Image 1 (spheres, rainbow, N blue to C red):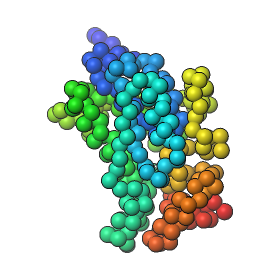
Image 2: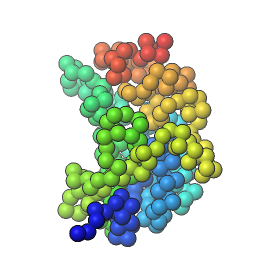
Image 3: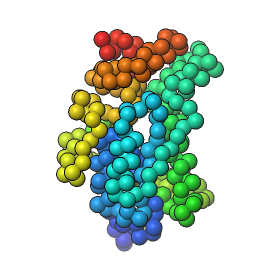
Image 4: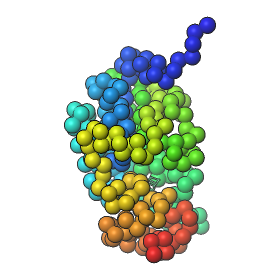
Length: 255
Ligand code: SF4
């Protein structure tokens, strides 16, 4: 009877099979540490880095950090653009269905699927087709300690939903078992610096104002992006719904 393949066996098999490894990079610390780890394991010739641009909603410097890390490793870097911004998504939803909450919620994260996952998939499929890849290993810097939902995610799986007759997709979470201090340590040991928002006290990066952000991150966002904060507050007023999953208005959350 043959032994069940370990995660290491699976990764070795996929490397040997010539799979394309995609480093999803938000510009945040977890993506950064994940890319360091990936480069220790996967040949650079089989890797690309993809960043989903959130336009003015994201932290300035996030895309540049991802781009520069990819360039330093000699990896192709792709920016995936959505057809709308988060605020446009909210406004359109309000215009079409004012009777339901206009903002994405933590349980139905339309923002993640429409602004990140969808555009990244589109770009990866395009790259794979142009470069003859059939097997794609989508690598995400998600960690178990971030939330109960993320703790339940398998560190490695075949992604049946995104696989089709052309491409087979896998999902790999290379730093799923790491803590935040371990992530910062990997970045430091690699001789790199994390995004400046962490030094300002931010816990997470990505959208400056995230529906799931803690108060400190929201306060930092207001301090460093006051003009963007005003746009979010104006959208809360227009729609009559609150952005944050706590249902507390932004102005009260940062008070
Ligand atoms: S960072 Fe938050 S608000 Fe922005 S897309 Fe992700 S879940 Fe949505």
